[in-house]
Image 1 (tube, one colour):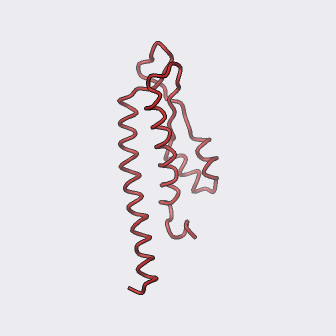
Image 2 (spheres, one colour):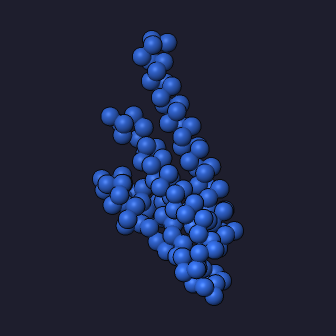
Image 3 (spheres, one colour):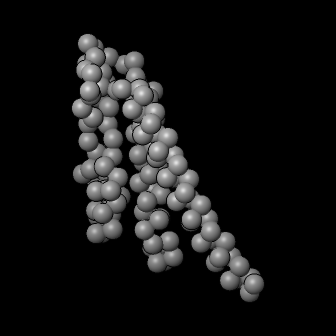
Length: 115
């Protein structure tokens, strides 16, 4: 039912939420020696999800480790500025997708009320 109602946006919202968690973890571990920054290839994960793979499978298959531009001496691959940019971009996209889903829910509520 939700896939018919929300289409691509339900899956996108779930994947953006997972990516937000990864980026948050990267930022939180910016000073942790040896920490390897990860990110989700959102487009590839969404394609996999739309092809019928489970959310966990599509996330696992499309999570990649970042390759730093300037490697740190302690082996940490988090580049804080890049993580903050990725986080901000993902937050905007998450918000836009959430607004679309909320609009769909409001339309259904109005239809049920007979408005």
